[in-house]
Image 1 (cartoon, rainbow, N blue to C red):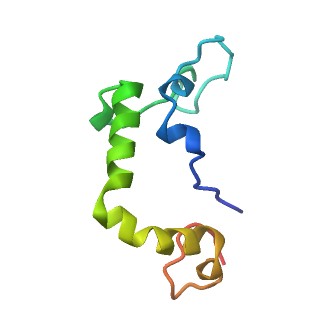
Image 2: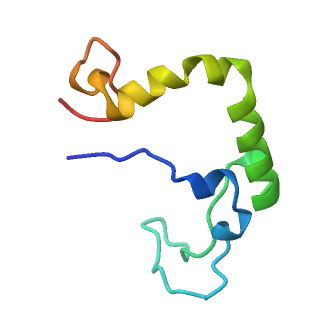
Length: 92
């Protein structure tokens, strides 16, 4: 099985994408609730604008900037192929 844990750029600049404005029927979650708007983490207080603002702040932090090359290698590069490189995204 393949797991794609990648966020598209819209997650970091477009709060509107988290609203189901067209009222699309996405069905029912396995836990029984209706799937509609994006379910955000508790720290976002169910506010897509706050969520995007925090995401952008996180990306601008020094710790993130100095490690982004490692993250890119794990998702797209040479570290995809190695258990010793702590590949947690793809089962080898």
